[in-house]
Image (cartoon, rainbow, N blue to C red):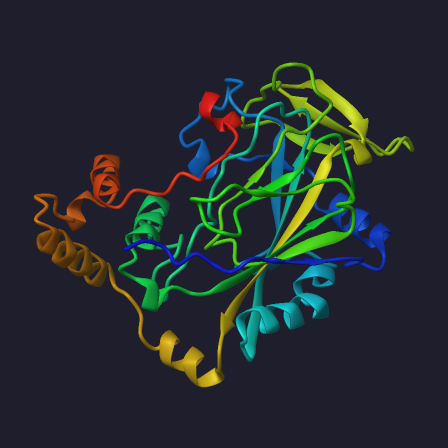
Length: 321
């Protein structure tokens, strides 16, 4: 068993009517902080280990930035998601922004992190959520999530590589003429990867996890990266690759939504399902709830439920972080 690979995404054009409104929203939510998370866990806050890739949530959990409905309630996204999934119910849940510059390598080739009814990042380690996804044992509990990736501008490099025909086939590439387009589909069932981003210097300058990205507000339109009290990069906003990610939960009908939301997974359910499958496989590995915070258990489960490696993926800049 493995993940269910999704069908190819759909490219949308002329997505946002007022691009200045995006800039105002962007400025209001500054500063932005380096991407880390499960790609770069436990990093020393004083060491330069991260590429110049910044992020922030505009909508998540109980927070919604003023003006974020520009993306969250985008009528075109909602209708496209309904058509893509042949679904009646699309519930927008999050908006997330990425700002990247001067990254000579690729981003991670990955599928997005999953959520399940009863299990998400608030109560379950990310490594376990991913093991649940790749095992294929919990598909009936997975929350289907539509994803739209929108790009504000074209930059030097910055292409998106994506695998609409599964990991065993070469990727397709969205590059050039990316400004104000969006790719909408299912990024939880499709590998994707950010390509190198200029300006290129032959290496990716690294920053500490405590670095920040923010507008200068001196009339130039420049944004600066400040790290350990020093400005390490300054350029106009158009130099940075700006993408905004939208996600929504999807259900075929209201009845399906109600049924799935009433049937949730406990940690004991997760352990039992893994252990039943491991026993059937003849594996000596067992899922011990007392080891849920032990990364050695993660490594053991990966030997049984490995993640696919997509053909033609670029080396990730995080591999050197």
